[in-house]
Image (cartoon, rainbow, N blue to C red):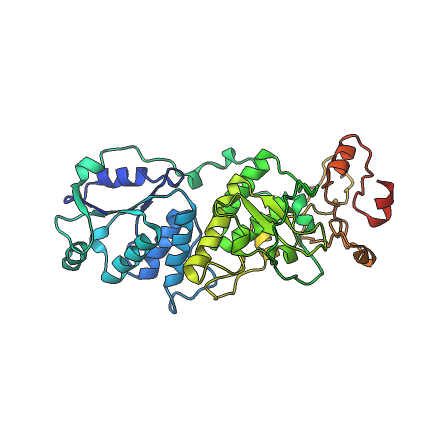
Length: 400
C-alpha cells in the first residue's frame, strides 16, 4: 500500500491521478462521489471506474453492502487491473476503509491512497500501522500530466454500430421449448470435431457487441450468459447446464451439455473479448459461495434481474427480424421513414435438434430467417449456392 501526501490539494496532482486511469493497462483511478460517506457509495464508485452501470440492480443497499464489493472484486480479478488509486483518501471513514481492505485482501491489488491534507485522520494512521505501507510525496508520484480520454468517452464516430439494433443469427436458436437437462461431468469433444460451427460475427459487429456487454450491467453472470449465447448459438436450456467446472481455468473454453437433444455435449472455444466476462462470473461465485455451482446463476441469491432475452433487448441485440413490408412511395417521390418494430420477435428454431423424436415439433419462426449453416458440408454448399434460401426447414432436409 502507498500513501501519497498532497498537503496543498494541488489540482495538478489530481489531474495526474485521473490521467493515469487506464483499466486496459491495469490502472484504476477512483474519484469518490462528494457529499456522502456511505460504504455502498464507495463500492459503486469502484464499479463506475470499471465502466459498469450503477447502482447495481437487484440488490438493496440498505440490507447488504457486501454484494457490491464482491462484484467489484470479481471484475478486478477477471481483468488485468493491478493498481487502484483512490483520491480524497483523507475523507475515509472506518467502514469505508474496511471495505477497501476487504477488496485488497480478495484481489491482491496494489492500493494507492491520495491524501489531500497535511496530515491523516487518527484512525487512518492507527490502521496503517497494522499493514505494510510507504508514504510518498505527490510531487514524486503524481507529476503534471495531460488528462487521458477515457474509452467510454470516445466519440460515437469510432463505433459505426453505436445505438443501432444488431441482428445476430446466433440468437435465433436461443429460445427453446424443452426443459433444462441435468449437467454431466463428461469430457466433451470440441465443437469443430463434432462438425458444429456457430455463426461468426464480422469484426465491427464483434467489437460493438463486446463494448455493449462489458458496459451493460455490473452482474458478470448475466453478461457472460448472453456472451456465451452469442458465440455458441446455444439455447437457454443448454446455457442452464453450464457449471463453474465447465469453464477452463484460463477461460479459453467452455463446455455445454444437452444429453444429445441437439448436437450433444460439446466444448466451445471462448473468444478473447468474452473471456473476462466468463472468468468474472466464475470468480464471483467463488467469492460469494463456493467453487462449484451454475455458472450463469446469481451466487449472492438476491434475484430480481431481467430475463436473458429482456437483457439482450436492453443491449439492443436480437435475432434477425422478419422482413419489413415495402411501402409505396408518396406522390412527392419520397419514401416514408420506417420505424423500428415495437416488439422483438424471438423465434423457436429447431434447426440444431438431433433426435428424430423432435421432428414432430414444428418451428415457430414467425417470419424470422433461419440460422445460417452450421456444418462443414452445409457451409461449403452455401458458399457454392447449393442450399435453398429457407435452410433449416425440416421438410427440406432430405434435399441436402
